[in-house]
Length: 296
Image 1: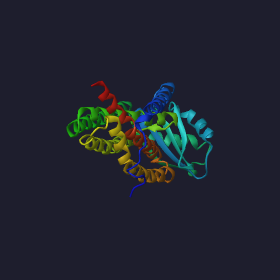
Image 2: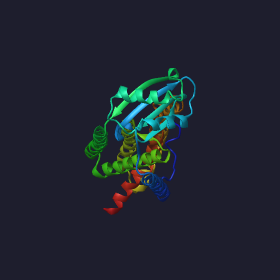
Image 3: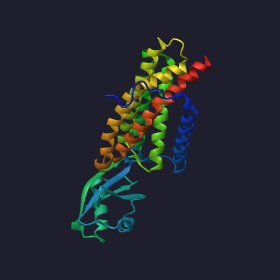
Image 4: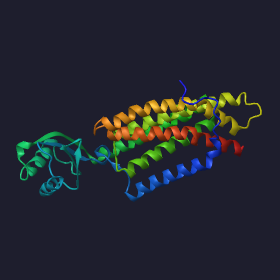
């Protein structure tokens, strides 16, 4: 099935300056948001602390809950609805006490403002600050190892310039997605690290398909320049790229809107990552090949 004929002649390489400008703006806006907000909004996995999920019989007033927590001095807390308006998620920094004690203390403090029988503790999770730091380091290492593996594989499968181009495209995708997380105030957790690794793999797959066609066309390019060959290769694989991305996006959009609060941030990361990954496999990776060739 072809969405677009392989005989199209879209001048992708003629839009290099526009593509670089768009990418530069997206990255700068994202990094600016991260800096101005004091860094990414780490979830309890990375920041450490205690998470308490409560279910109320009727939707509670969050301000009343916040006032009730002040009496037990658990430190800075974040309170938000989780799924339905009756489900409340409370995150606190303090994590020295036992899980049962923290959950009971929160429930008892709220019993002065709500009927205690109307409040049930759904879950209590705790992560110490040191564990959070260790998890952050391991998450970064997992992404680094993935990138090293990609460089080795593409250098062996193609050539060094293809590996460098692919890494530049992957870094572009990760930076833009991280910026989107900061702009939309999404939590960065271990689940999101898994989403980022998925994005890296997905984007790389699209890029390799384009690179394989470029290499094939270079072997028989005749009088065509590298820019013309890349243009032809992208046009020839465009239908496949859009079809793959389109079917993936259908699933991701369904997860985003109907998957529930638990996987909302995960599906958001995939939604942004698939869109940006498709864009980078067409524009960003190929641009570097042209630049590399011009420097030889």
